[in-house]
Length: 321
Image (cartoon, rainbow, N blue to C red):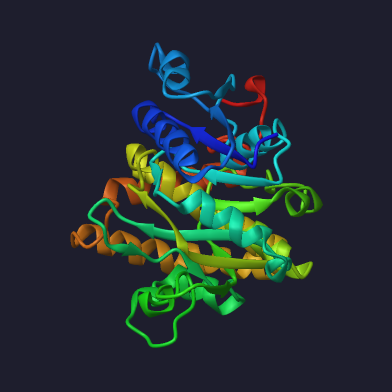
């Protein structure tokens, strides 16, 4: 029996996925941790994808007929295994030596029985620490994010991420980043996995929030570390990714704060966030260009009225465009 089931969701990231699988097996051997790797392919044009992944180390590859979204694909992978711990790992994330041992040792310690979710220190490809944990968002946090107040320098900010000073040591947090998230299998099963109403983004926030409601603690574990390139898949269509991010924010708002608040947040997104983003893009101060911003909000409006402009989470092939 394995100690850890590692679930990697691939979407047009074949080269990164192969390196990720190689790194997981190399670190597992070094750390003395037994892993089973499950690669769930949501779509890749690489002709030899399955052969290359299996050549990188023992892995079970599941090819979905269409892109089912991160949450659904992650659940498919997690339910194939039986290990006591599940590590959800982005394909562009490389595990550092000692990290798998740090995770399992920490979670196997009886003193940490109340911790159900753990996330590592995350570093960029240049070695700098990337903010990766935060408090859970409040109603005001989501509105602040929508109108851009989260970008202003403020002391004590806890959402969307806490300060780098707070990343200097391990501690309990509201949530950890889904790019590298380990969860106890009993907790995963109690929560019924990721909520498949999220296609992409906010799945990690949601599962941590639902865990917190049940008294299950999320924890930032600095002794574990991964390097995360980031935005490998999302950068391929920035406007599409932005639309998915805003839709997931609204979905989270509705599920955790109610439909009335969701409608208020929608108005904020439409009347304040949209023109602000467009202005920033036109001034060259945004990672998403003006065309991408216009495309994002066009997709959101079309999806509001038709339900088909953006993919529906977990939808079967004949129900997606």
